[in-house]
Image (tube, rainbow, N blue to C red; front, side, top):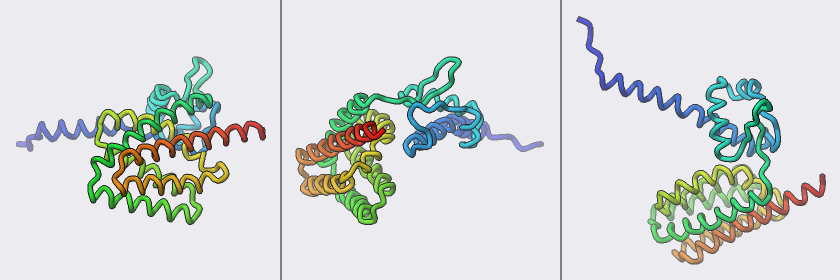
Length: 236
């Protein structure tokens, strides 16, 4: 007699296969977001599906699913008979995103203070030290990468699932513009000083100061970005 196949194992294998297929388009969407962030895809640019498929290394099915996800996020626009274009948000839209982010991240900082553990504080200190190192090296890309981890960890410490879900989706959109403000003159220095203020507020376990410092940090990011865009437009 042949060996009987375990029905449960078969179900688990099928489930794993479905998860892989389901997440492929999410990975593609993440790759496209990264390309937008790094300027490989620019605002207003038309996407040629065949070229993008070859560049990323996927078929058209997951690419189109990814583009639908990005359309729902407001990052691309799908035009009948005219293809897909990288959406060009207005400066006011970006300002509105930062306005919401500043309130939500400020709330996260307040809640993080209340939920802070010694292990959580030690990780914040380590992440902050990495920021200091990348700042000293003048490496904006690495600074941004660690900055994203630090902000996400403060969000995690807040321990509010509803807040986490809203912020996670908004963070993906804001990340496309957030890093650019570091190239505005003096902004890199200011950002580091603001992070030191946030660290000190967290060290003192002061929820009011932590919230205020985080909100101020986001507000200044937005102002720097607006100034950068205005300067760029004048130059053009």
